Length: 179
Image (cartoon, rainbow, N blue to C red; front, side, top):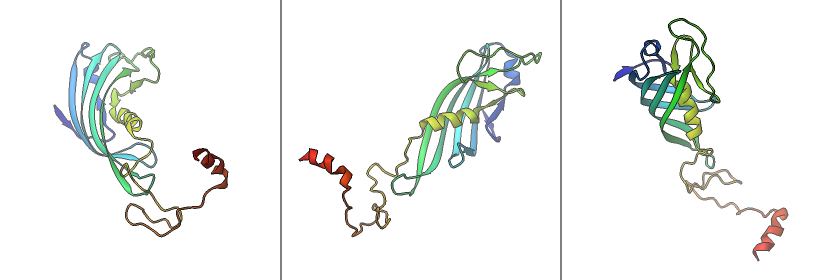
């Protein structure tokens, strides 16, 4: 296995595309940061990837570990969420590697492609699979008490003397159902 240091997790598969179906290449990688969207990034990324030649491109199997820093949705403390991914997906060639002739589009919906320079952007796949894996709401712990709605203190750290809250008159009809 080769250790590959590079930006954006792009791998050149031109030589692999010239091999018969079943040819393989394996790499390990180590990246500091991969932006997932404007506010969130995957950090301390390590993993390995195996490319296998297929009739229409390369099958990419990857195992990836990293950390996503987010804010707890209840108390706003920073939360480090560990991510472990294992995925297989096919990257399709847009052009024939030897002649440069355009190839037909694959039938699958929203496929990954090998670009015109014969680069597989594994970072793109990691980005998409990480976003799917992340929980909708980040919590520092399952029993997080959040912030006091009156004074704003973190109720996980200290308790406050604020009143427990006024009842909303609109909910009184629901409360009567409990009696």
